[in-house]
Image 1 (cartoon, protein in one colour):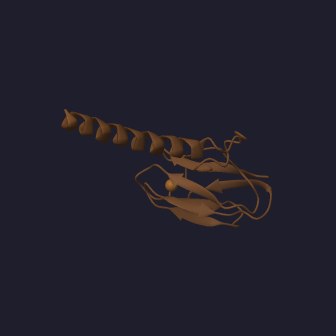
Image 2 (cartoon, rainbow, N blue to C red; image 1 turned 90 degrees about the horizontal axis):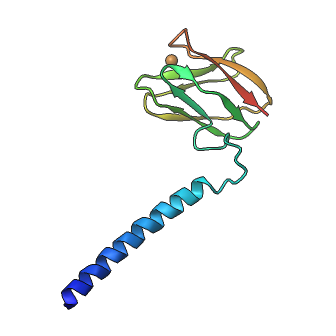
Image 3 (cartoon, rainbow, N blue to C red; image 1 turned 180 degrees about the horizontal axis):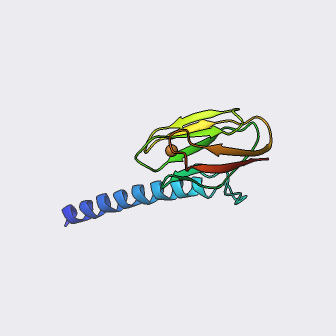
Length: 118
Ligand SMILES: [Cu+2]
């Protein structure tokens, strides 16, 4: 009888721990209630050898996520930045000045995109 009670208590404790962890991590994600969407985990995602749309804030570091298995670069057409992002990895970038930046990948000539900096 007391064994069963103890086991139940243990299971309940585990459940609570998992629930608390899940709650806190999802709470962190949705805590940016300003639904800007841009300051989400990765401001720029590279997927299937193409750049996603990116809107970032001038002077604020943002994350680039590469979901492909191969390396890509995020290179400004005008040459103001050049970051390489390993396959399955991330890199960070800060663009100090507002504007619309045309980007490309130095490895894949077909890859072009835009980063909007406000
Ligand atoms: Cu590439």
